[in-house]
Image (cartoon, rainbow, N blue to C red; front, top):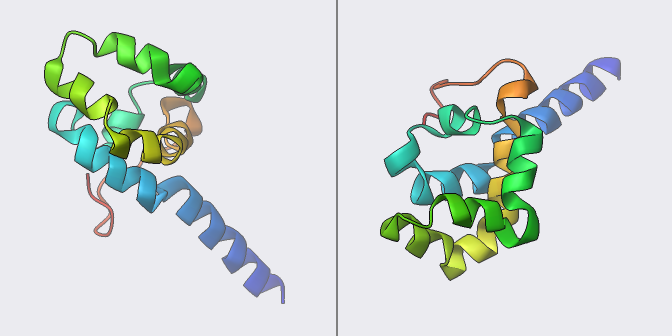
Amino acid sequence: MKKSLLIAALLATYSFAYSAKGMVTYKKLCSSCHGPAFKGAAMLESEEWREMFDNSAQNLKNIHKNDKSATKKINSGYFERRMKALRDFMMNNARDKGVVRSCDGLNCG
């Protein structure tokens, strides 16, 4: 019984940190400029990511305002629909969250 609880807890933690929806969103919108997903998430600490996404990602929009391609992506309906998943992925894999993940054969970039 204890072993199955431990496995369930590890799987929940693994899937929460990897957040497939957030990772896919990052790959589609951010990776062309910021590189692999876990490297991109490690650019800031979790609190800094939270602040980037506060107020409908206003700080994120301000930082990218001089880049037409990035602005178009951030103002897209896709970004609006996936913003929470992207924020969660970035916060859960931020620099202050311990070991920064990298390619593991399943989730690269």
